[in-house]
Every structure is written in structure tokens, then in C-alpha cells.
Image 1 (tube, rainbow, N blue to C red):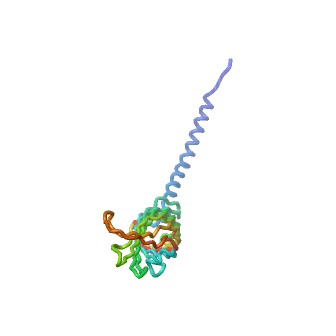
Image 2 (image 1 turned 30 degrees about the vertical axis):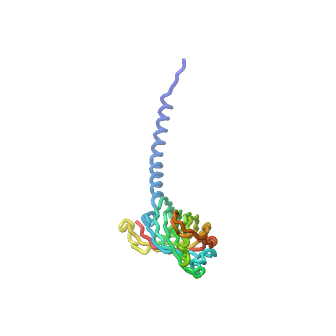
Image 3 (image 1 turned 45 degrees about the horizontal axis):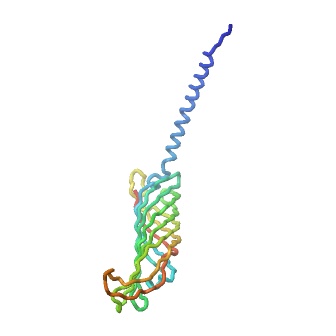
Length: 246
């Protein structure tokens, strides 16, 4: 005759599971709290925010194709942008954005008045490191589409000569932003004002300056084209802007 006793192991198994549950509960709760704390931006809405920007950009264009349209190498552009923080971890954050910039220059070429206007549409990928609630550093990579419109007005021609083209650009820059105010608690004032500056280098592909008379397609008058070579609007640049965050 044999006897089997199973009640004791079953009791020990239940006790072990109960002990594990008692230990796992506080551990899991602590991990959840730690995860929630880590998910919060280090400086609240001084670090995670929507941002609207307005400023000026100066690009130093050294391409010879720029010479017929300016007496120096500076192309100054008006700049507008909007961005949003989409990721933050401790003092680091990532904020992509969209930008539009407009610039124009005019000069004389071949004793004739010339003008050049540009539009830049860009997608900015911006990384930030927040040193303190009132200052952060930034690095930015910005691919863009650049539209350039050139014109030369010859008084002896039947119409102005024009050349329009789209080119590709890519900027790499670094800078810093400083909080102007308010410096109160984050929950007291969600709207804040910043001043920022950045500098870097912008690459731009070149486009032809083969200029055609600005005539309607059905205009019977004909005249020859004017070739001013090619133009690339790349070069070192500096940008200063003010922004509002909320």
C-alpha cells in the first residue's frame, strides 16, 4: 500500500505565488512611476512646446552667377517658421518644423537693371539640449526647395528677359536660444518669448540663367535668348530670429 501526500506542495506553491505577487506589486508600481517621471520634460513647457518664429537670414553667396544681381555677396531673406517638440528625454528634445524664406536683390548688368527674388520652402529637423530653463542649444538639418526668379530689363528688347527655376538645398547649422520672459513658473505662464541665433552652411544646386523674353506663348513676336550662365544660392549663412512658444 502506498500513500501520496500532495496538499503540502500545493500549499507551498500557493504561498510562493502569493509572496511573488506581494514583491512584484511594489516593483511594478515603482517602474510605472519612474517611467511616467522620465516621460515628463525636464523643464516643462520651457522644453516641450509649439514655437512660431520670425527673423532674418543673411547668406554669403560666392557663386559668380550672383554677381549680375548684386553689388556684394549678401542675400538677405525674411524668414517665417513653425515647429513642435515631438520627443523629449531629460535635457534632450527633438522639434521638426516648416519654414518659408523670401529674399531679393537688384543691380545692373550690361548697363541694364536686373533683379533676383527667391523663395525657400524647408523642412527643419532640429535637435536641442536644454542647459537651463532659460537657454538651450540647437543643431539643425534643413532640406529645402528653392525657387529663384531672375529678370533683366533691356529697354531695346520687346519684353524683359526672365529665368525661373527650382533647385534643391540642404542647410546644416548650430545655434542657441535665450528666454526673454516671462521666467515665472511653467504653469503660471504658458506663453514665452525667446531670442535665438544660428549659423552654418547651406548647399544649393545650380540652375541655368538662360533667360527668355517674357512673352505669351501665342505672341508672334520673337527675339533671341540671353545666357548669363548658372546660379547656385549656397554659402555660409547667419540667421537671427525671435520666437513665441506655448
